[in-house]
Image (spheres, one colour):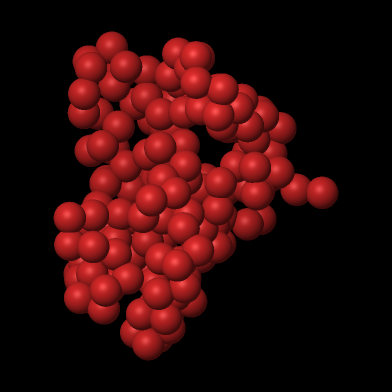
Length: 156
């Protein structure tokens, strides 16, 4: 079975109130569609970074986010992942102010995930960043997971 690293924005879109912004509302619906139709076809994982981000903010919303991910295995932040995250940043793939985004990529990569599922199109599901991060990962001896949105992982 293929593996998916669930990044925090995916969880936020899944459980947040329906948006009045049409694009955000469409992304929320795509997330729900993936969650209920496709998620059973994958082994899903989160990390301590996801737990930290999901538990922040409004206490009631955080409680809802945490409940959704409470049963998923948690990938550890190893020295190997920290080193790769630092290389991703120092290599210019991701800006220094987006350390957690570099950590998402690094943790998923060193744990050999097949996919990173996200709605973060600024620092993760971004073609230029994906290309640069993949080069850094390859130079470090890793194969980076496919970074995509739920729309891209809906299957056939």
